[in-house]
Length: 224
Image 1: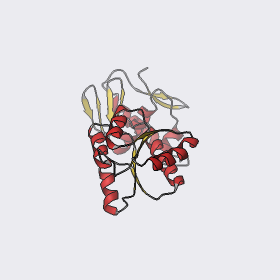
Image 2: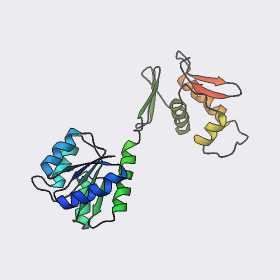
Image 3: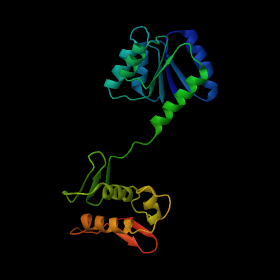
Image 4: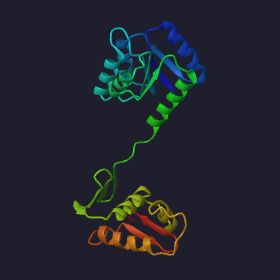
């Protein structure tokens, strides 16, 4: 993990570096808020560790400036300012975590790993598309060829699932477990009925047909 440590106390910075580098992290130290801001803005770091009380530019102003510039590198405040108002102020300034000195090094290490893990998660796609069909996961709307298509909640979830597995055959069992939440295979035609209704809404009157049935295997959404 590439860590930018913004800390004006040389002894504290040396101790943190001595603890983090043997764990495989690369630690760059900025001795004041101005250098910290310039280094963070240049990018290339996975996590920022920021002291609140810094010369030239305080930690809160530093992080607010970064967030205002759309720099969203995960940031942990590591500071002796441990009051409730202090912690809330740090989080509201754009901090992702807040740890008060003195602290257990093992806790700092675990928090840094957790911050990096969250930031590394792939962002959820908000729009799913195939051919001229588009599903918007935020507004929960569907349109094809510019025409809005009204779907019931479960039809929307079914289409969303098919689009997330675009080009793959999904089985009836997968749909029952992942869309309906059944962890057994009930004797029901619920999947078949919903596929039929969904096909009537997104394929009827449009070319090419997108939902395909593979007898004995399952269903696939594809242009072929």
